[in-house]
Each structure stands twice: as C-alpha cells, then as structure tokens.
Length: 265
Image (cartoon, rainbow, N blue to C red; front, side):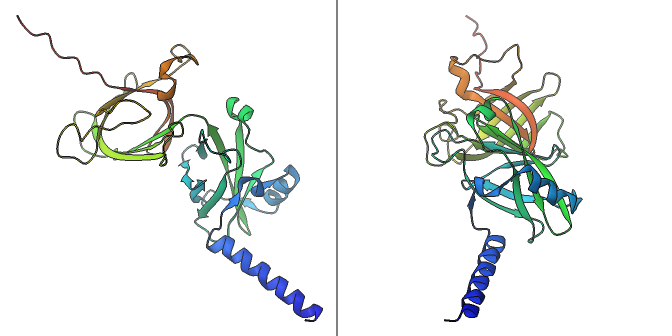
C-alpha cells in the first residue's frame, strides 16, 4: 500500500472516531477531558460566552449528575466502593451536537472533595462556550421534583423522589419513588411520604440509606450548630438536598416517628 493510501486511511479512521465520539457519545475517562490553563484560556478567547449552549445530560460512571441550571452547577456524588471514583467514565449530551467538553486542570482527589473544591467544566462549539461549576461530594444526593404551581391549601404536593445512594453496598445506587412532600417554609422543614407499589401498608414502606423500611421521612436543615459529629450513627443519613434540581443544602434525613395520642384510662 502506498504512503498516500496509508495517510488517507489514517485520516478516514480519525474522522470516523471523532464522529463516533460526538454522535454516539462514546465514554471517555474524566482525565481525558482535562486541559491546562493555557488551553482553557485559548478556547475562551476565540469564542463568546453563550448561556443558551447547555448540557442536556452528563453521566459519570453511567450515573446521571444533577444539573442545577439556576446556580449553573453540576453535582457528582462519589460512589464509596467504586475503583474509578476519582477518574470516572464520562458521557454527555448538549443542545448542540457539535459541542465539545473540557475540564480545567484539576483531577478529583479526596482532599479536594473534603475542602469543597469547585472544579470548572466548559462546553464549547465553533463560536461560543458555557462554563459550569462541578462540585463533588461524599454524601448521597436526594432530588425531589414537584409542581410548584399545583393548587393546594396545605403546602402538600405530589412529588417524585430520586435518591442516589453512594454509601450502601447495593448494585443499583438509584432509588426512585413517588409520594407527597409537605413543607413548612418558616423553618425550612420537609416531610416526605414515600409510596411504593403494593396492596397493603407494609408493602408501601421503603428502605433507604440503610434505615428500616418506613413510609414517612423527615428532612432537617443542618448548620454549624447541629452538624453531627463523625462518630454519630446519623452520619449515613445526611444528604445533599435538591428541590426541582435546585441545590438547597445539606440535610439530615430521618424516619418520621409518629407518636400516638395518650389513651384515656
């Protein structure tokens, strides 16, 4: 085979590889997307910022990340027992099929996660770019979706629950269910009534985060005054809470204890 034919074959294979990555979104390691500051700046300088260029979906190790469009942030819950948790497989899709993705400089490390380090991720096409903050956590992620326009007089809404349980040793880390959410805006307290398919009350109870099966759960905001210590048994029940994909903070998730009224003798 002549050198010209070899060159043509190499170019053709390269083009095919690029098309496969862009169109069929072949997974690549996180480290493959990392660029240095100089390359990052070069991409920005030759393009304009465009907030209409957005990520539609991004997955690390096949698990979908929460995209908080209001705060322009992505949230990655690091799986406790995963071998490649610091260098996950990445796949993504954008609203522009020609857009590429890069990550600025830094690898994910436990030290950076502990220090709440904010990574930078950029998607870009020929003319524009858009930057997201990438935040990593060791905590499970809980996202509650509900219709804020639903007519209700009791602050009780139908909801869909998505829980990414990165701590429990279970094959499927994602738990979804439907039910009700009740809100108390004064102290930012949330109550969940989680229902799973079943004919009786026992079957309707759900086990999450290694807690005993229950049908109602309570969320309490955590601050510096009531932050559980490392040795507390409640540690595994701390979650990062999102409402309609919007970050709300770190919460303590507990079974709701229903107290029976005192019986008259």
